[in-house]
Length: 105
Image (cartoon, rainbow, N blue to C red; front, side, top):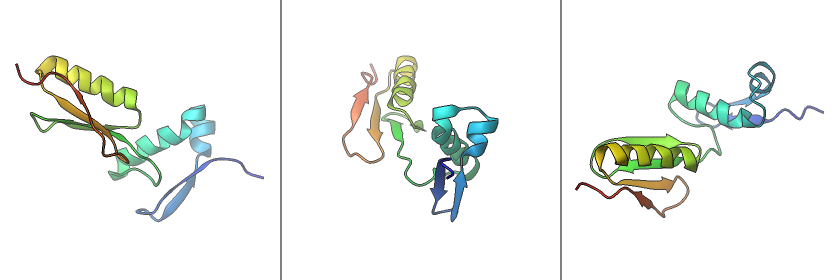
């Protein structure tokens, strides 16, 4: 029985096993995250089932998308600190937003 995790992408109409990430890259329990980031970097979209955290500045066109809430919050806090802008944070599957920063002063 092969218990290597797999990831699929309906847009690409493909499925991949994560043996490369586990064996060659040695990323262990972060194999799915590593594959998802690499897939997005090379195709412009995430594979199926990957929901990201998003940050959008209310004052300028800056936006980011990250897999972890901690990473997107860190980006938002840094952007707010340097620009004094307010940034909206939300998860791709949720309509609730959180605002980071005080806005323009």
